[in-house]
Length: 455
Image (cartoon, rainbow, N blue to C red; front, side):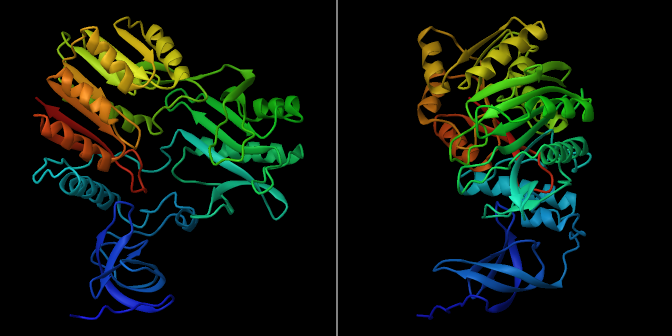
């Protein structure tokens, strides 16, 4: 039996990158022992240092590229790698799209056991930069001064950042402006070690088509000091701001938003457009961070549903109704549910705003509402799901299978849990027709998918 080679920390090694993980790290095998190295591309010959070696795999830090991939491009921002916001920026955009298709294929093969799933080429965006319509930026003290930026990966050390490159430029500018106002007014940044200080995060939401902005100041106490001055200065400096909100979060937690919002000025929402409809977006409600690509994602789901105007449709995990209302334009009736009560209130407002009266919105868990509708004899022709990263609840899957809809359209931000759940539907007699990856997050390893299953 061949003796396993032992590896030591800081040891220098040379090898070829054979693959990328679903997180975008390169895989280099030395005597069949895998090391994960960031910032590399398959086919590259590299020298790396071992940072950690476990029993089954290790991690390395890139030192030198001996043979470069033709897919390598000059990186835009070294800080984006340190803070983990742009881990794929060293790859050309076509290579990123191919990689995302490959990640989805592997998930459906390994986890879903679909040997020959039809995984389409990834639908990319025109410009994979400055696409984010929302920012959640921590506020901390760095060398005695209030700073905004992002945490260095695997740490809570704030790295000051002024240009994130993947956020809309107006959002980056708004954060710098607010940072400077907070400094002028002597507001203390939050210190998570002591749970003291005032401002924890600045959250900015911006309507892609309207340009309207909402500013949320997440604070560690009931009232913001010098509130009136700060509000007046923000209004004067940022004319596109239509809503300034104080969010109170006094817990020692990594959760960004607390349970309580207080409107300091303006409206309690911003408006934006999606698929020719108007949507109101509140402080806590979920809205896809890349509006044009969300339109591509939702249009793909609508096309997959193949609605004729006669169908009764279920939309589970509906948020503020962006997809439900888009479906309602093509269906006879839509039933939708969402666990966040505030999102359901916004969804009902959005239905009125767009003059759609063929949607029923309910607040609560998908796995609780579907059995109720089953008991009431509501028969769904099409079930559309867009769950959080953890995927579908087992009880919900069973309730959908008991419903026997003709089609299931699965929208997902996590190909692994999507593949797992599609396998459960497959075992119950559904056929996976295709999987369409859609890129909403250029320069990162994240990918959304739409999968169509038919009975």
